[in-house]
Image (tube, rainbow, N blue to C red; front, side, top):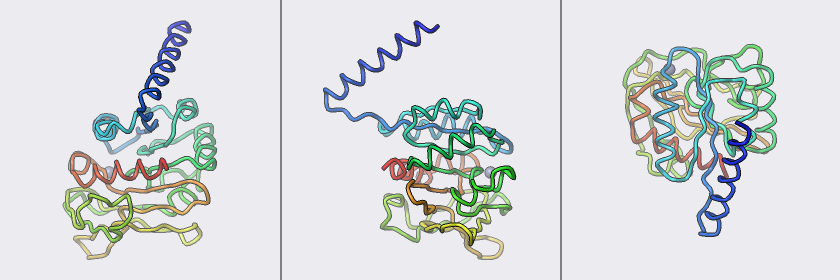
Amino acid sequence: MKKVAKLLTGLALVLSIVGIALGQTKPIQVLMVGGGGSHDFDRWYRQEDTKTLESTGDFQVQYTDRPDSIAIYLKQADILILSNNQPIDEKGQAAITKFVEKGNGLLLLHAAVWYNWEDWPAYNLNYVGGGSKSHEKFQAFKNYVVNPSHPITQGVPQKFEFQDELYRHVPDSQAKGIEVLAIGQSKETDAVYPVVFTVKHRKARIVGITLGHDEHSHQHEAYKALLINAAKWVAN
Ligand SMILES: [Zn+2]
């Protein structure tokens, strides 16, 4: 097995050198983490979002739902996408912290902007800038782009609508702050909540997207544009 791995590494190296010689740019290496409850992570993150990102030719996605493999895969990653709500062990938490504190990009999707982990309060404070503890029932609601000049909202309609869970996202006043790029409006109370936002960090680019429960979002053009734009933006 070791020999095969060595051969494959050698082959990948040769191919990347040939690519550089031909003037091709190397795709952005993405580690996407899924897994946990209430969602079909395999179908909508591992399959659909990977397809959306890789269809641009700009990304190569490695997906895992094994938190104990995060530290290993992060060594090859340019950016990290978290969609999971399953617990991440101490080693995984440390690897993610090191990755982000070095200035690497982080994109948080749907379940990953929840208050999931009591043993990791620094995650919500530093990387989500707050979080969600509840959501409205699954239904169609309107989303509005409030910052149309940001790279993440390019090509996204000013108003878009699909069925999803509107997270009641609350910024933490102790955190460094978020910049809201799009909001979702409650059907029940008319209250608005951030659905797409950047999280202030001294070094890393961080984006949170609270949308993404199932096929209604993952197959929607607005969600796909946001996913691609956000992944590109955090990679810079
Ligand atoms: Zn959900």
